Image (cartoon, rainbow over all chains, first blue to last red; front, side):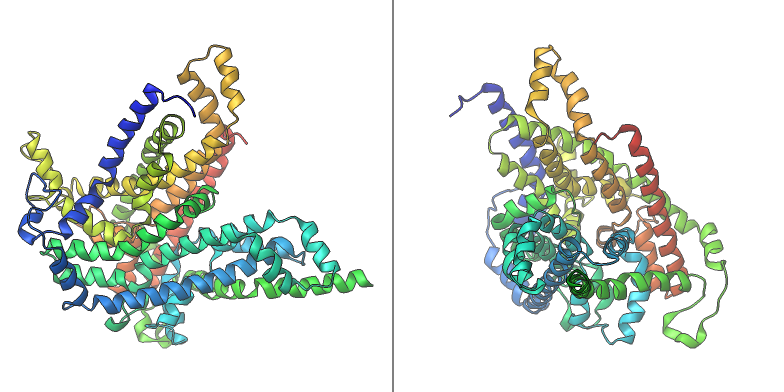
Amino acid sequence: MQPIRVNRVLVTVLMAFAGIFFIMPFLWMLSASFKPELDVMKYPIQWIPETWRAIENYREVMFGTVPFGLYYWNSIKVTLATTAFSLTISSMAAYGFSKIAFKGRDFLFLVVLATFMIPSQAVLVPQFIIYRWFGLFDSHIGLMLLGASGVLGTFMLRQFFMGINNEIIESARMDGANHWSIFCKIAIPLVMPGLATYMILRFIWTWNDYQGPLVFLRSENLYTIQLGIRKFSDMHGEFYSLMMAGTVIAIFPLLLIFIFGQKYVIAGVASGSVKG
Amino acid sequence: MKQRKQSFYNSIAGYLFVLPMLLTTMLLTIIPIFLSGIISFTDWNFITGLGNIHFIGFGNYEELFKDEHFWRAMTNNLTMILTVPFSMIIALVLAVLIDRMTYFKSFFKVIYFMPFISSFVAVSLLWRVLYHPTSGPINGFLKSIGIANPPLWLADPKYALIAVMIIMVWTGLGFNMILFIAGLQGIPKDLYEAADMDGASKFRQFMNITIPMLSPTIFFLLITGVIGSFKVFDLVMVLTEGGPAGSTSVIVHYLYEVAFVNLRSGYASAIGIVLLFSLIIVTVVQWFGQKKWVNY
């Protein structure tokens, strides 16, 4: 046990102040969502509400005029499917690009990497047209496909697969195992931390995606939570307490995932290859 | 013979493993970007169907060149690049302090990372209220410390872009900080010990050891940060829709409006292609610039 050092304590206290300043918007949001509307904009800010209206606010958001429950369910469905889909596709490709020597591999990988540079907005119009042709427009399947290609996941997981010793793969090949069973039984268990990182990141990005649903969904019964809170704010723009309650509800699952998985998220981001 | 068979098997297996990923990338990115290139030379509107396609050569690009709205969006985008170094400097200072001099490291990491995991829609709605010109908490605070006429933030064309940029710094800080902390942990401790023996001050150590050793991280953050700053769509769309008076309009939002509100597919595609080339140029410039200052 190291002795406690004075200037270290001092910096910790200083950073705590800076940190509080930094999460103040979130605290304000939470506190506003618990208040009656009239108290929201009062100054000085009542960080702890004098009159509580938490249950009423949240009930009105969840079961009021805008079907938040439905949007929530849609988001869960789309996010889970996209994450599973993307994880499968990316880990397979990552294994192929790192552990199988085949002709043209490096060239293909370069092409895939180059698509990184293309901003999603630059392909919005053709994507829209292609989606119309294939009947993917205004469907959840289309949305799931949108997040599934996972160039980023491929790139990231490839780093993890490259950490596996080639001799393990070789000796399994000698014993007559094919690549598919090596992939499933040996490689995947070895890159679990990498998969966890990418899974959490993909979940967060899909859950938070606004542009995709905005462009590729039309029917209101298919809306995801992000479109939902936007619509909600258009309808109840003056009711800041309700708006903040809706925002809290939208952020909540991510907060849970992040708190439990923060080790993986931070490790993955720190591996230096990820940007949302 | 066995060797040949083996390599044939490997090729088949390899292609099968990467196939699903290649197909989706092909369908969603590679084919669309080529289509985008083609459509950008037409005056097409996708509602009217394929029959009404007319090639107009460089017409869209010429119009774009004279389009005031586009140039304003471009100027705003270039201004927004300023958020990148700004947020990197704050993040670096925070990272050094957190890594070297605090207790509860992981707690701080979580706090600063929170905005990064929140959706831009939620963040935008929240800040719209915080920035509220007459009764929002930010102006409430400014008035309470004696500023009689605080800026109207998002409602004022002079301050709206700065207001958006403040949010960008706030959301991006945590990401930069985490990467800097990871970079700092990779610097060998004996470098500092040697510098201590030579009597170098902490500041000199920071300038002559920390910064050069972090230069690959700095370079990575610069590249991804600049590209990211060109792609802020959600934030602008929910927060201001480009207003007031175009003061926060950005290229991607303008593209969206042209494509899906004005329904001009050809013109929108031209904007997309120009955006792509801008990003390529910015990245290439940084790539060549790195040789001067990045140490590997």
